[in-house]
Image (cartoon, rainbow, N blue to C red; front, side, top):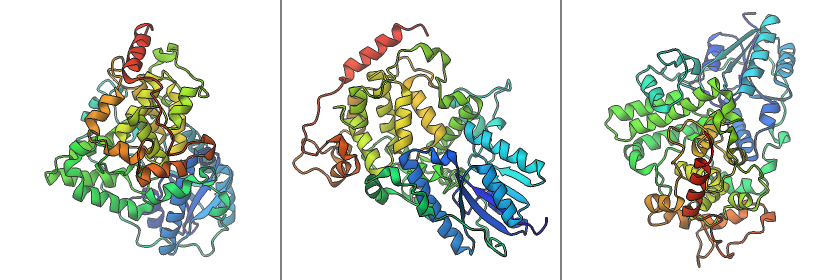
Length: 472
């Protein structure tokens, strides 16, 4: 067994540095066979996340090639595929990085128990999170339901220093056969949108590290002020790379800590945002219903519209609500694959509160359209905005999308960047939206900009009336 290969099963950890499972496999002195399995969980991904995953796998394969290693691609059920690879290669161990959504946990538990029963070493490692969800407890031994106490508990904890990239990845004497990535057609559902979004992708581990370095050098000092301004490049944009593990949260945390020690004012806020991501996973681990049902169960009685065929839902999806902040944000998502965080809150609040539509409709739409889609963060963000999630003041938190635009995009730079209708010379980014969307939507830049589906003040009143008339 000491000379039998180790299969390193990559999932949402598409990097070589600070990769505990890969490092352990290399340190064992045994041959290492990196593997990705396109199973039913990755098959079910939405159009943009699946396409972005395919790009990430291509980048990882290239990085492994540079190390004189390979990424073996197989399609099928995870357990059966691993068992086949074990028979083909004589592997005596399978290592992987943990995931935390319920479907992945169920899959991985079955894989681990079955392989161990067969005498195969099966070992999972941390790395996707800084704090394992079961290690953060309240004084009474429960889990945290509010972010601020969670932050206070973990902010002083030691976070493991990032590991380096293995100097050498020992190769087996012979490699098993691999699928061709192109045959999987992971970008098929993107259609013509892929060509529009591709220039905005920052692909792979090297790009992620460059993005982090540039933000720490030039952006983090003003992060407190700029992160809420959608017309300004004021965020790290690392969510795209964190979602697929092209960079680790540990690497981001330690960079943020160094920036804080250097006196850069926005560094602690950046650290808090990393912990907000951890909090989402903490909730998902302890209350998996976050992904599928109202986190606050007393919201089950609230009469949200659940029919996404309704005209107002379609106008919301198409970025034609007549509310500029909402429409600009949605159009940014279709062109870039991402959406500014302030925009996400406004878009979600408008759908769930002004239009009184179920948060599941919006959550599913983001899951289809975002290249930085993350199961825990997406679900918590939607439930927080809807009021059914971990927001301490959901009853009266109804964002006014007009006053929010006046506050955070006073000169309308963001609006001009993404909305073409009504302008003699629309920006290239605003025009790109019409090349990205399905032709069946029948939209053109010379259309008239629509009146609001629901005016801001009218929608707020309707939402508050609906809340007041329910028995929560």
